[in-house]
Figure 1 (cartoon, rainbow, N blue to C red):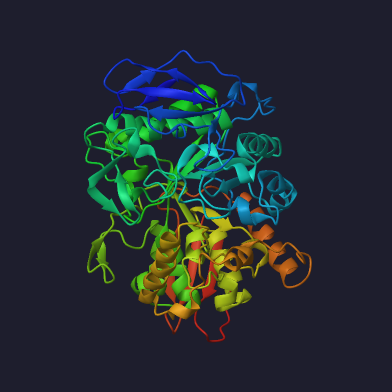
Figure 2 (figure 1 turned 45 degrees about the horizontal axis):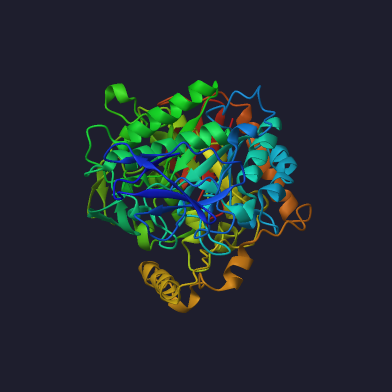
Length: 537
């Protein structure tokens, strides 16, 4: 065992009543020749203190504060030896939350829905975070054990089986990971070394130490964790949460280092892998080649596309939607990958972004809905509840036929009416109250009444998010499902778009008619409330 713990002079492995002392071999590392049997429960003690979980615990069967458990990654009988990895650009990505995708809320139960996803035409599944987090349920963005798949979902064996079966069905799997912060409950990393810094702050509290004293071990923790998901779980890529909160002034930015490490691990395994970033900076450097100063990621989410489309479909103009609402905004996002490419943003009261029209549209992921854009609403309602099924069909056509890579959120494909509000299960009363009050304050910018905000701590909020799979063949769900699968099938038959090959023109007496074109596509839509006739030759 090798433990990075520069803050400790003495480190011990604790197994029951016995202890194994590690030898400190340099300023930062402790090592021991310890080879336990798979399934052994153990903890770590620093300087004689109470036993706590291993920072790289592979399994936390009793939750975030319980003992760590040894996992034999080499012993899993993989059957995906012929799998060559993700085919990019994807035809369509399907985002799901394991805990609410099925009533059982497990990897095994999600596997039973693979037939549905294949009929729909999906080729990539994106799983919301599964690193062990506190409580009975949650979104997963407050995980504290980055190396341990959530025990309630099925743990390491459950995730491996999920990926293995998916590959056998022709489905790639990418995982949403959170490296910009850790959850507040069960986070003991600071006791081992300088994982955090007070030089910067984030919306979630302490910032991860990426460029200060002792940061080498922190960066290794992140990069080696990312490689672990590719190597030990055969994942086809990672979606990186909120990379604009990676506060790093190093000459070699953590994102470039991370991209290099993940792509190297994929090449070593003979599989194609992707790294997708979430960022609100509209910075093309994220997906540009390192040889020209970029970070070398494969794709980035385009919030501009969503916000432009959402504002046109719903008429909402509060909060960050105040920057959108004109047909020209969506036209720019379709044809130029971003709306704000260095132009003035009223909501920010400054110029925002850089041009990206020179980049391959495959570097951008677009969506009508995702977990954030549904969950960051007062009650977590979907677009079908906000604007109706006709508006959803229009938005789906614009998204699924876009030159960029489309993503749909669980249940969207049949017009599900189950909401997806933000939900937590914090046992600390003060933290629970702070989360509830914080959500109410956050939504004031959108003009929503605090009494309309679903309480994240109420069990009913979580229960309401569990997908209802009944009646998929009944109307209007069957019709919507056929519409989505038809669009994805059509997308598969289209030639790939290249940089500059997509166009979008605004016309019509109300300035809300858009004609989108790309190789193989001519799509005319009208966002006004007027009856119009559109003819095409």
